[in-house]
Length: 375
Image (tube, helix red, strand yellow):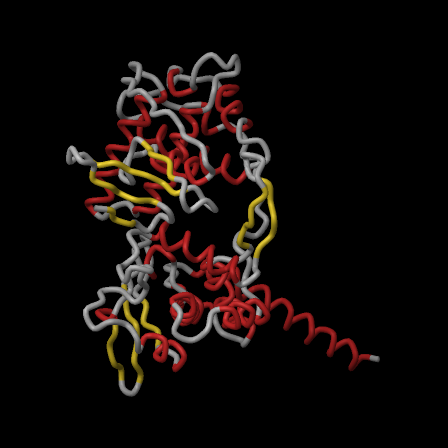
C-alpha cells in the first residue's frame, strides 16, 4: 500500500516484510524515486527529502553521542527542554523549530581546519569561534542572524545549568542588514494572483482567508468552521493566535471569502485542505504549497540554489498579505489601535511601524500647504 503526504513526491510504502519504506519522486521525473532512510519526524528528514527531490541520495548520519561539555550537548539538552515548553504552551512551535534549526546549523558547521564539526568543540568557545560560525553562512546573513539568535538563547538557558556563563556569543557582531522583511502585496500582485487562480480553487480560498484575517501562517492552516460566530448581522472568524503575547482576533468575513468557503465539506475541521482533501499537517507544508501557487501566478524570480541549479523563487508570501493589510489600514487614516486589533499585536510599538509612515506623509502634505499660504 502507498500513502501520500503533504510533501510533494513523498510516499510511505509498506514492504513485503511489513517494514516501512520512505521514497521520494525526483522533481520533473515521475518514474524515478529515491529511497531515503528517515521519515518526516526525524531531524534530518528535510535534508534527505530536498536532496532526493533534486535527484541525489544522502547517506544516513551515524548516531554519535555528544561529548561532555560540547556545543552539541548544550544543543541536545536545550532542545529537550524546549520540547517540554512547547507541550506546556510556554513556547510556540515556530520558535522551537527556528531555534532547533539554527542550533543544528551551528553544530554542523565545519571547524576552521575542516577536520571536525563545531558541535564537537567545547561549549566554552572563544569569540572567534562564534564569528567563524556566523561567517560560514556567507551571503546568507539572514540565516546567520537566526543561527546567532538560537545560540544566544541556548547559552542564556545553559548558563544556569552548568554550561559557560557570560559566553562571548553575546558579543559577536550580527552583520545582517534587514531589507524590510516580507514584500507587501500590491493591487497588481493581487489581481495577477486571482486571474491565475479562479473561483473554487484552494489557492483562491487561501488568498481570501489570508486577506480577510491578516493572520499568521502558524494560525491560518488551523482555522475552520469551528472558529465562526455571528455578531449581529456579521459572520466573524474568531480565534486566539498562537504567538505568545498576541491578543484574540475577531474579523468579519467578506462576501468573496464566504463564496469560496461555501464548498468546504461539512465534516472538514479546517478551511484549507490538501489535494487529498485533508488538513495540512503543518504551517510548513502549507507554506510550501503557497509558494507554488505564487510561482504559478508569475510572482517569482530566477535564482541559483546551493546546488548550482536555476530555480524559481516566490517573491511574495502570506506575511506579505498581512503587511499589505496593515499598510492599507494606515493609508486610509486608521489608528494604531485598529492595526493592533486586526494584526493581534499586544503592544503599540509594532503596530506604529505601519502608521508612522503615512502619518509623516500626511504631515508633509499639510506643511507644504502651509508654505503655499505664506507666499
